[in-house]
Image (spheres, rainbow, N blue to C red):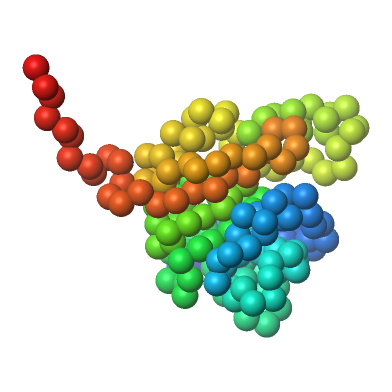
Length: 193
Ligand SMILES: C[S@@+](CC[C@H](N)C(=O)[O-])C[C@H]1O[C@@H](n2cnc3c(N)ncnc32)[C@H](O)[C@@H]1O
């Protein structure tokens, strides 16, 4: 039987995301520049599909979201479902990680890709700006890992950070390549004594 409280929270979240009107163009442009040579990109948490507008026309664009964003959207809830297998080696995850409860689970599921470009808001400065009336929307992020702790989470799930770019105060975008095998499973080299 369904749990009413969980259903209510989910319905609320879907309503919130369905009303999305923002585009985060600076972050999107940076991601599109890094991804410009990829033949296909899955945009996970695609929102208004701004990334599609910045990618070359030849790039196959695969939108994925919790809300139906238009024709071709693959529906998934990153907090409940397993990420379905997607027909590309590359993904973008922009402005989404902050709303995912279990980051190790997400980063492990992303290992179906060879390359992932993702963004993350590290600092609680956005909370301060909101409190001072200098930010339009209240922050509802589920966690705020600092850059070092966040990098550790990524690397533990078997990713190598090839580059990191600051998008705005507290927010960075990361270019990740999958390590094979994941770091934790690599044989320990014998110690030379
Ligand atoms: C802040 S918007 C970012 C949109 C877009 N990536 C961008 O950068 O313009 C977050 C997006 O993630 C989606 N989202 C939020 N929670 C999600 C979840 N649990 N599973 C899948 N998508 C989710 C929302 O519907 C929304 O489209």
